Image 1 (cartoon, rainbow, N blue to C red):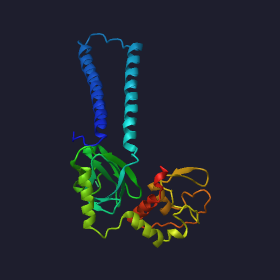
Image 2 (image 1 turned 180 degrees about the vertical axis):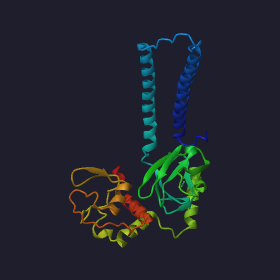
Image 3 (image 1 turned 180 degrees about the horizontal axis):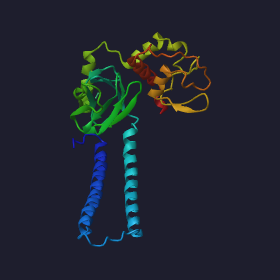
Image 4 (image 1 turned 90 degrees about the vertical axis):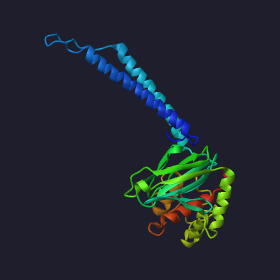
Length: 312
Ligand code: CUA
């Protein structure tokens, strides 16, 4: 096993070893029983009478029903508990955008810092990764953190981790994505919080002209004329306002509702007629072909920045 370097790693390993040992024990019981009985009850001579088959044994049937049922129930609750911990991102997590491309990883930090194949994070702080791909399906995998998540074109996925020790750990692509797949590796460097701040300041100083995703989104908001129909101050216009949209529940025409997450915003930009917000007319044109993935990332970041912080 690689080192256990995230908060979830120990729990994933404990569950893995439980499954491994439980299945090894069941395997040993079944195979040794098979071998022993084959020898013990073999037909010794050609003329020996066949044994009469045993039709039923209530005690045995209860044992081999109840024990596996208990095992499966334990596995379900244990596994579901760990799964939830891996899926639910802590509220105070910092966020980094991860983009898979044939054949490298691009990391975008909220302040505009950008890196290739090298993810730098502070230890002891939860980090949310928002993943997507520019071409085919990749899978972002950090064995030492026990996390793996597909990066898909045309959709956002997310995962998170909290590194528990400093050091450098491997990043792999775990989904065959073409001839460069095995080269699609990287490193995650975990620094102490002080070193991380110093690194971020120096990397920002190195690229002073950088535009953060939020700033880029703000420019696109007026350049692409989003502001002719949407406001950022809470007042509805032709379309709903963007203020406090992110993370909230939106009621749709027809009564259903949806949470305004990254995928909802993306869909609303590319397929505006798919989900009409209750009380509005389906008049928005699609931006399919007018905005590329980076533009959409930026608009999503901008809309997220319009969320009231004290609202939580
Ligand atoms: Cu990307 Cu395999």
